[in-house]
Image 1: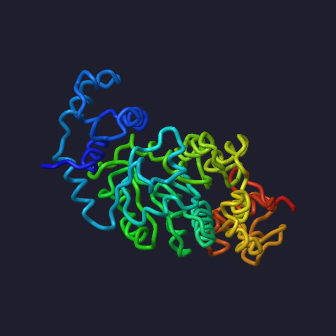
Image 2: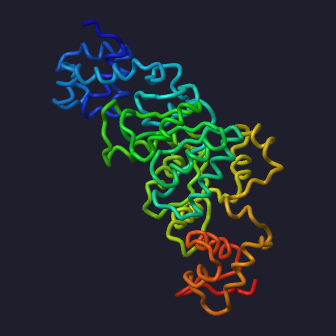
Length: 374
């Protein structure tokens, strides 16, 4: 069987213990990838490769590569190597950029202006609203929304972009034939059908492994001009993405929250470290400067606010918030009591309480909330 350049690239990706750094070193030595696979064991050993790696380069597992080739027969499926013109230039700038990417959807948008939106897998109701609304408005403004396809903030970001008739990129921690989490199967179909893309550095058939997901964080930040963290604990994987963005010289944005909310602590830590505090989508558009110049012109007069906060400004509450505030006394009032008095759902009450607290109208105390007199 005649082997093509594509065959050898796919073989390289399936070679054990060859990551981005080692792969780049080998490709610098052998720009024509076929030459790499023509080397002897001794010549390959000079690069410090293990016996298992050398054996795999000399005798690639061609039967596994057939899975990749079968997947690529679909015209919607693409394979981009770092030697290709279509490889996204911003991603190529990072020191450990992936050797190649599998793409389902439009590969051209990988080079379009992108904003990464990341956060907790178990966000608050307000956090989910913020991710959705920010993604929706920024996608309408022309930015591509990039995220990691995980539950919580990632999923809401993809949904928001789609709702705004925009485009979104999902960076997967599996092979593109394995949709994880499974509940996102519908979104996985909607993203490429609306002009976006699913991408992965992992070969077809790669299952969901815990060690793979941190690797995708560098791709999320590497593709994007900036990263917005919506909600994150101190040890959140989202902070890894943010730190990588800083290392890559990209902008980092964070939405503040209540000091009593553990999901806000990661964002507050980022702000202390120099991330830009974000209250409106306009803040992001203005900070990204020339990249988002068209978007700023289109949206600067609309004052797009953070979800929920857009309902009021300068301590002037709308009727729904005023009504809830009336149910809170200057003595401690529990959430259960407020749910009973207002007739609202618990998650709605909790979300509204957070906003009232942020605006200084109430204070959280053991057992409930009290008015501050503001």
